[in-house]
Image (cartoon, rainbow, N blue to C red; front, side, top):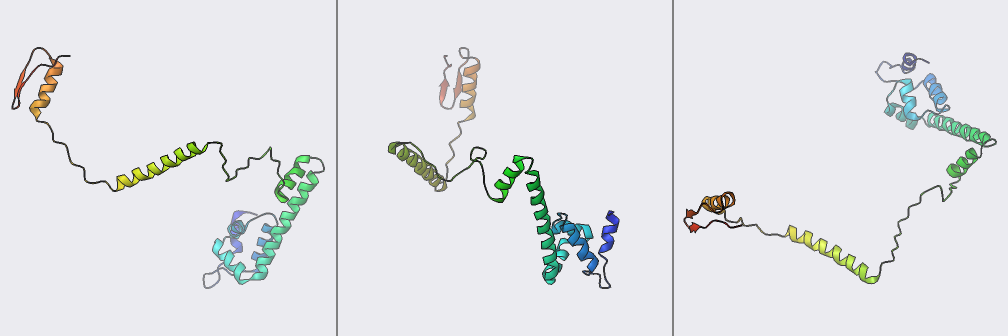
Length: 185
């Protein structure tokens, strides 16, 4: 069926709303029996998903028809997998794993919440102590006081250091604090 035809199924009535018709019911049941979800059915007939869900709430027989169609499709899929199992053991294994929750332990990774270690008591105590110290440091950072700025040395003192690095033996510099001797490396 073409896309333009599917939108013609849902026709707005005089009040602007789309009414649930037998044609829409038949189309949705047919789509669900082929594997469509409720969301895909809404797109197929050209209505918002909310409209289709409202129809299913207001019309329980419509909801049962859709659910029955989906379950019949599911049953047909399982039957075809069973038929494939006559020739292929993988199909039978798939059924056992998915339907009856059988799983091969070697083929699946299982993660459990239990953690066991062989660390001695002193090592475990050390780890616990580290964890508590980390928490104390976080608390100290939160409770820290205002940081005081360090005084900036006068520019002349900085200049003297720079001059000592550039020409260590040739210059001396006078400052308010006195003569700065050359830096000997």
